[in-house]
Image 1 (cartoon, one colour):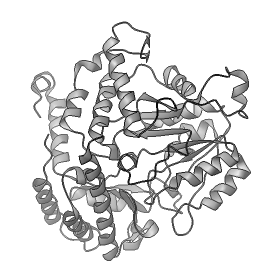
Image 2: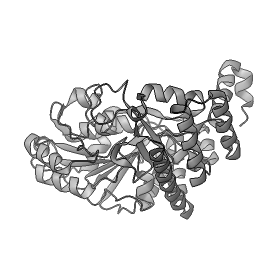
Image 3: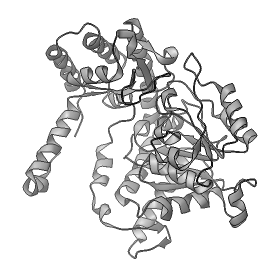
Length: 429
């Protein structure tokens, strides 16, 4: 990429931008939550669309000059609904979310009171910080009843139901950030109904797989579905919230002080703006619309199928080399490797891999108590699949990882192997 103006205006930042682009080009990226956007998406993100304030929603803005932005946002909404095969009569979608964390917070604040109970997957079981962990706003503003996994690493749905009926949460969150198996949204949806709770499905990691029909869809069983737009969806950094156009749950006390015709979607919109956000980032909204168009193409399903193939091969190859995987394998785009199986912890393994040009993040595994110094490393295949790598390359990557973490081979030599692979599958930036 050329940065004519940046290089003249600010050499320091210009040099850092160039260095970061080179780092991406020369790194095998196994971080499950990262990906590479298309050049077209980059063009939209860097466009003058960033110059405008558009607080409010199409047809109801707080600033003039928004007719074009209204059209862009409507297109993003229409494409988002079409992508997930949703009826505009039954579902609404808010495309303004800055990222997954404020989007989840908006859902909580929209539907329940501070201090009421939410229920999500525990961090060391594969859940996200925003699903009720004590250090996040979700754990500070609300009471939390978290569910986990059994000794096999799989979600314990019986225990989930038991906790839900005991604690009577107002929201039950399905979805995870480090869970390698398919999630049964239908079971969780039934449990939520039984407990009188809203069902929020956070599909940030698996949205692309859902679009491609390679993971069960949460939409028939959820009241609200939130997803980020990067990760497997391969769009810009941001989030969208899908919500049903149906009345607020009758036994929720908020219903008594709100208009009877208010829907879940109405409440979500108010929570996003003016609740937790200001003006939307218009360049990102347009880039989301473009990413939804890209994800609707037949080639996108082919890409998602390859992500899963690559993940399964990488997982099996690592197992052959003595690494222990939580749940023993993967159904989706990621795997969680317990580094204690090779005498390491997550932090040590992460640093050793980064030294040779492989990025994979440390991650808690079931039983861990300290998330900053966990026992595991999460690995995913969306980014390497975007580069064009397939099963053969996954075997090579597993060999490099083994050489680095177990055989303790020369970091210089292993880095050359990484660079060789990266040059074979270049990023076109």
